[in-house]
Structure formats: C-alpha cells, structure tokens
Length: 469
Image 1 (cartoon, rainbow, N blue to C red):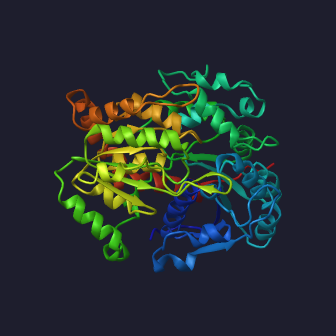
Image 2: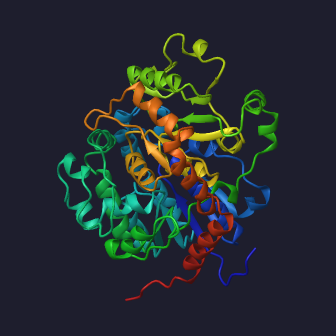
Image 3: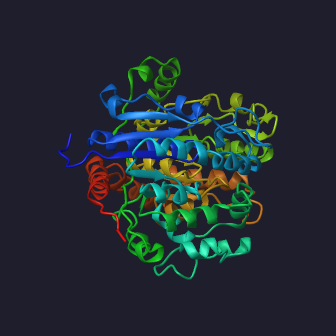
C-alpha cells in the first residue's frame, strides 16, 4: 500500500450495463489498494452480480445499494441493459434518472471527496457542486470514440441533427481517421436514447460539469486522439490506461472446479495451437433470427474449428432468443465446433494455446482482453453504443478485419463471414493482421503499463486542489 497524505472517500456510480459496471469495479479495487475508501453505488441486482473481490479490500470497499425505481414502460425487475431489448433502454434511463434523490441523500451524509461517474447522470453536477464534491467523468470508451463525439457544446446543442451526419468523420478531427458510424449503427443507437435527455446531452453535460475526464486508453495505443482531447473537451484528460484484466484478474478455484470448463478445456486440449477461433457477441447484441442463421452458416462455411458462446438475449418483449442456430447446425459441425449456452470463462478460453482468433461484437473490454493475448480479431460490430467505432479503429490499426455489412440495414452474407474468418485465421493475406495483433500484447497486455496509468490517475485525485472563488 502506498503512503498517502490524505485518505480520500471516493464514490463510484456506473451506468446500468455490464460493460460499464465491471471497469468501474476494477478502478474501485485499485483505489482501495492505494489506501482510499470507495463507496460503489448501484442497484441490488447489479451489485449481487459483481464478481468476488479479495477479503483484504473489504474494509475500505463498501457497496451502497439504491433501490431500482419503477417507471412506466420498464418491465418489473429489470436493472440492466442485458435484461431488455434495445427499444426498452430509454425506460431504463428514465429509471436511472430517478436515482437522483436517493443518491443525493447518501452524499449529504457521507463526506465524499470525489464521485467517479458515467455518461448517464446529466443531473449529477447540480447536486454535487453545492456539496463541494469534485467529479470525474469516467469514459469506458476509447479515446477515438470520445474524439468522434466531439466538444460538449456541440453535443448539447445538437450540432449533428441527422443520422447521416454521424456517418462521416467530423471536422474537428485533425489527424487521419476512418472513425465514423455506419447508418444502421447510429439508427440503432438512437433507439436506445431517451428523447427528453438523449445520450449526446448526457455526455456533453457530464463533460461540462466535471473537474477531470478519464478514459480507458493510453498514448501508446491512441496517441492522436489523446493529444486532441484536452483542447476539444476543455478539461484535464488523465487516461486511466487500458485496464488489462490480468492486473487484478486470474483464474479462480471455482473455474477449475467448473464442469463446463473441464469439458471445454479438454476439447481445446485436443486441438492444434492457434487453430480454433472463439465467438462471443457479448450480453447485449441481439440479431434477428435470419441474421443469426446467416452468421452461423458463415461460421460453418469457414471450415475451421470454433468455440461459440451463445447468450440468451431478449429479442422483443416477452420473447427470448432460446436458440439462434439454424436446424441441424450442431450436428453438421460436431467434429469441429463446441457450442456453449450461457456463461463462460472468457479469459481462460482466450488464453488457451489452441485459440488463434476472436470473432467479437467489438466491445472495448473484450477486444482489449484479446489483444492483450495477441489474438487477431474478426470484427462483427454490434449495432449499439460505440461498437461500430471500435470496429473501424481496430480494422484501421490492422489488428483485425471487419465483416462487410450493408451500411443501411446491417445485413450481411454467410460468404462474407466465412471469407473474413479464413483471412484472419489461416490465409496468407491475413499474416500482417496476425503479426500486428501479436505485437499489441506489449501494450494491451502490459500489466506494469496498466498500473502506471492507474497510479497517475490516483495521484491526480490526491493532489487536486479545487478552485476557490
């Protein structure tokens, strides 16, 4: 534990999505290791789903449970984006906004120095400022995504009114960039937004109201956008690093005892090194049944061995995706495919010597995990959040290849899927991609580099002096 002059009390308040909740927890654990007190704030189900943490951290890491407000339109018991289809997410944001009063009540009695918050609570600055609490806007996104979104005044003012305006690189980007949405991606993203306070207003308000911006990136990976961001946002920008999972994560005894892992591990042990590609589309990507079948047929046509993790994601209200595979698929690929429904130990699978590539929905956490192990990426972006922007970034860096899709409706062919899988995994044209991805291990999997940026972020919080009038 480091020697510090002042023990800070830091509240942590993520958005209600797994891709946000877990990075906020990792930062919380590091701050506790550095001697600070952390109050991690969320709703009951989200806190109950968090992974176990070391007992030695427990005295200074507390979990503050705020009851989930009920709003009309949000199904009873829902507390996460993983529990609902895309068109219901705006109601989750309305419910999240109703946490303002209970959060304010907690802050009034808790002597908090800092709040590390997400994009969603656009109302947080107005309750934190009168209490003298400083704010960190923690963007779990890449620096490239943050730069693409742009200055807060343009976000709040609706600088881009039409969906098509998000399909081109904005004028404030002063370096070569291929970062822009496809039309189907931005249209889908807009379906997730509460029209009373859309995500751009929330994001812009969070930037304007905070004292410092931090984000999940580092200059070694994204030098140009990180150079631009302080000028673009008019705020200090202190990158928190890529948060490589090996900083705090390792296989547990529970993993070793898990029957699923034993079965899968034995199957992987029988495959040649780097011969298998891993498929996981996250907890929140929902394809139509026809497109799910097209993806499966492309995987089949690749002719290569694979492991496919299938999540039971709601397609529409009242209808779950019980099985997205076409009839007879598992029988036809039984000699080279392992299909697993439900949860799987992703890091253990990716780290197995037989895994040679990753077909991913382009979630920032998942791609960092894969590149930290030097694995090339088959980029199949989900049509929500910034997943399309991540796909462009990684395709541009030549550490993966994007599966070609119709820009308007997001459709694709099984032939396009099979082609990219084979290029990334085995064909000569993919050798530069495989080499580039392998080299990324030195950045994305660098534990010491990750600790360096977390430490610099912590020092900023410790040494920050609020401006006094």
